[in-house]
Length: 307
Ligand code: NAP
Image (cartoon, rainbow, N blue to C red):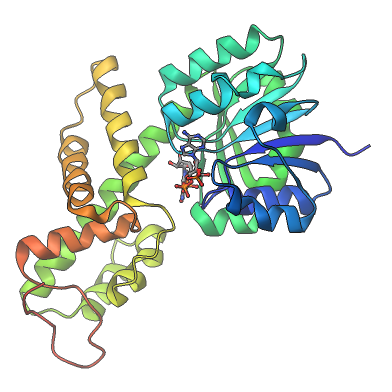
């Protein structure tokens, strides 16, 4: 008999992940705070719950991917949360990027209900979620990880066991410290080039034929050059993640001077109202400081007017 899954959080990531689980034949009961976002899932055959507790009732697995630590706490251990109804033996897979400290607390509370918990943050963004090609970084008991693999395999192409509770999130925060910095420094370089009269297309050809090339910037550059900042990964969440990385760095006594500066760049862009745009919009913050735009000119001279 097909197993049942309670799925919580139908945002940019959760919506396509949940659809993939329905297509794979699981019985899904979904919850989203804003009910309208559950309609595509309802049309695909999922049941819609009024609370996370209702979504978790009788489920073999509960997958949750909400925005931040406070939201994960609310949907898992809150008044109408998953732990109110979870059945013994069920597995909670929390794929949100949240504080490892909060996640370990949720794992303990889940164990108190004789159920299991995995921190299973992801990378791969909206496209990876749509194609079922996410990379998972998983923390928790290894046997629980193995039991959750049939579900994780429908959602991702790579599943990396990182260690005990919180280890998946610790890895994810390190990965986003790297990724946020790579994109920010790419933008700094392109702003300098544009201000110096080097067209973005020319600069891009140089980067693509150098050791500075990356799959990240191969993907993001065309959007930056078009000025298209439709959110795949909202800037406010990248700011959240570098903030969490710095908290982890403080607690472990690890100096991260570049990440600290990059956190302030994303924080400044967020304070300017760019939080709901894709995190590539960090480029527009740097453009405004320098008074230049990094936009495709296709044969025209580099645009170097006021941003
Ligand atoms: P999103 O589109 O903003 O969706 C956030 C989801 O959280 C929505 O379903 C939202 O409900 C829900 N939510 C927020 N606060 C809540 C609360 N207090 N109670 C219940 N539900 C609440 O974000 P996303 O891009 O899907 O990201 C979700 C998580 O995945 C984040 O932790 C993010 O860092 C991580 N992540 C994202 C990406 C990416 O590329 N987008 C990649 C890797 C990891 P409403 O619809 O009601 O607002």
